Image (cartoon, rainbow, N blue to C red):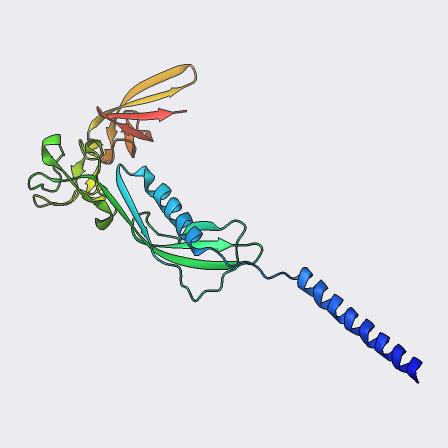
Length: 241
């Protein structure tokens, strides 16, 4: 009987040792992942948005909101930030950061990108069709992230172009309010210059439409042939073969 009890105790100890060994193996096989450092995510967002706005000529100030503390994010090997489709790089923006390994997750951060830079307003009242000169522009400095897209930030973006609409004095100058001036007018006598490898031929023609510099212009030659080419300053239509 004593021998049987000793054998039973030994068997119980072996089972217990086996269970402990299994538990230890499971613990080693599936370690608990460390949580994601949310301050790292904010720094990634800050660096990314600063780089996105670096193409603007001005002072950039980026403020990134806090990561939702209720999220249970595991540490990511390589967090990848990106802008949502259609987002502009300044103003109030939503930034996404994606993780693919070791665990896939996606988090959104709110941020504000302020860009203080020079931009231009109308120095006086401008009327539709008026060709812009330097004296028509007035430079101011402010937060362009609060302005409409396409604001004029350099004089050469506007000088020589004509107004598509009328603007009051002090109005913000925008690219979409301007158009290139017409260099070929319908009914005008034009010079058609055709060129290619080793040759150049010029002939006179009558323009069939209005066209700005760089736009497609059509014309009818003296022989009655209708041609199309690229309008250039000086009443020239250029055809390159």
